[in-house]
Image (cartoon, rainbow, N blue to C red; front, side, top):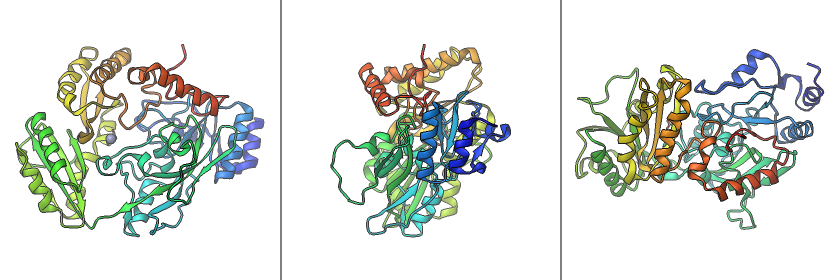
Length: 449
Ligand code: MLT
Ligand code: ZN
């Protein structure tokens, strides 16, 4: 292709790192759920911060919009290009520095996968506070840009809580560097925190200084079956209060390809995980069984392989939902006091517009975060189904995105839980940092018109 921009980009990153083959482009242009598609104009893969800065300067000068992409594991179309947009792959920014055991942190490139960081940290008796099922593909830059949550939010918080510093490149190619080694830094606007959760709309994250946490020697996992949501919520509240070492309380609903976890069939399951300096098996078992209304049945695992088998019930949801069809995913949170009302109303609300739809709900119950996955939504019912789920959430005082972000999927509903002044302030930031609107211009804000 004789496009002058492509020629300049080839000079910057090398010809092999500017991709134009339509088959290759298609893989970058399709999201994990296959719901969102785009034909990228090209894919460019810079190999470090200097190349990234030069690539952005070129795209900025040419007015070509770019969609930053890490492991392409967005579940809301946050990294899928629209026609005419290029994909800026950060996969080659994969330098992982030495673990600083004294400070308890590490400097990592945006393209380092979560699994690689976890493995490296564990070799030093540490680990990273965020974990999620897509760990083998999800990259740290994308996780920060979307403020990813995952399975251990209860104990360690979301991605924002792990980020000690960020280096990022602005739309025009200038480099922001907030990677200070100082443990404390109180020198004005917290730009690193601002970029976390900005979904690639304000700058492109190139490197991160990430906090690590101790890796406790003892871990236990329990799976408990419940007859009602009220019993389940009472038990979760009890276990959370009784067990400070609790790391996860995950709602498990449907499973495919794995045998039944417990005797009997329960409509609801919760997976609990605890980790600490002392053996956790008995502590966890006691906390679960001492609940005011103990579960109908429960199993506790202290050894790694059995724990992994129990976690599979929770972690395989996404792939089994994707295998069953192209899902409409609603990643919402409601106050715990409103969870029962939400669960009672959400399916009838969906069925009113899509009578044949299949609804699969799982999530992170301690945070009131439910992943409502809807299969079999006819095109003409898409808008009404989204309106019904997200309207219900907003009416109950919840959030239309608990952890996946807004992306393309929920931009038309941002107003439901962010007032006009918030949206105006966010737009003003976008205009100040990316006046030409070349950074992921289609996500987060409502579509024009
Ligand atoms: C999960 O909790 O497993 C993730 O958020 C993925 C999903 O919602 O499918
Ligand atoms: Zn989740």
